[in-house]
Image 1: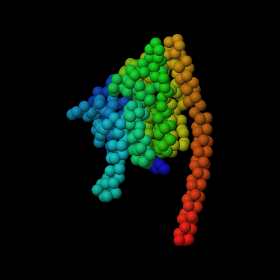
Image 2: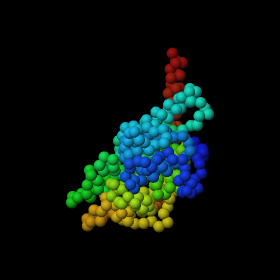
Image 3: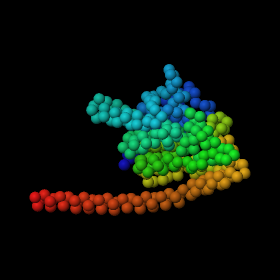
Image 4: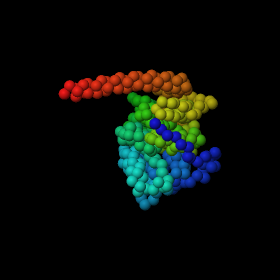
Length: 356
């Protein structure tokens, strides 16, 4: 069960937000136009609390901590590709243990624990570790910088890569239209862990993002944030079009913005006034240019159908909540039956003892 206590600072406008305490400096080697730096800055500047941050190996890590330099003005840990979540779980547990033993005084402010990982280390390589941390209920926030590809190692496909995208390991050609699998629904998977708060965000909708990040910081227990991070290098758009491409993703409903509370309550947090065609989003990225050739356009229609389905998420929400209610009722029935069996077993054991 989550505990929500609002302790975060009020951010009324972009000017206020831009003057927040900087925990992430601009002196880094991320590609011009990379959305990673925008997202990280928005996350860290959303709170005045002390922070402990960990980062998996990936674009963010290799471009922000080139020895002896660093872009991080907070406690920061670099760990392996797969286990940044467990490293932070260890830090969070140590902090709790030291406070219980009195080795950290009660008046010392409680820090917030944040982990960053790319889609490769989140959807794929590190998923087992993340799942374990959420199952155990560690009090930390995991932020996935989702650029839908292994950008740091050469543009290989990940399970976040959308169908039809061309990557170095799923290239488009005369006999292939690129990636053949649908993108993994990581947000629903994390919500299925019963996490107190899970959300999907995009840096272009900064108010929506800050609100969710602050709610995540105020939530006790594991929090998962999936952040769309447009990649100028692998999506192959101009560096000055990052926000424009992000707008297209959100307004076409290819990347919807929503939150799931307690694994049960689904809230759509942004509904575009004018939903744009999915082909406008695809056409802005050369990684999808082959889809506009004869013989491949059925994939555009498939993506458009998915977008249309997302537009009906309100109906899905009602259906989902009904299904969750049915599951909850079934679970209660099962627990009652197990309780009855346990009581019968205890009675049998007691009778056995009495006979002896």
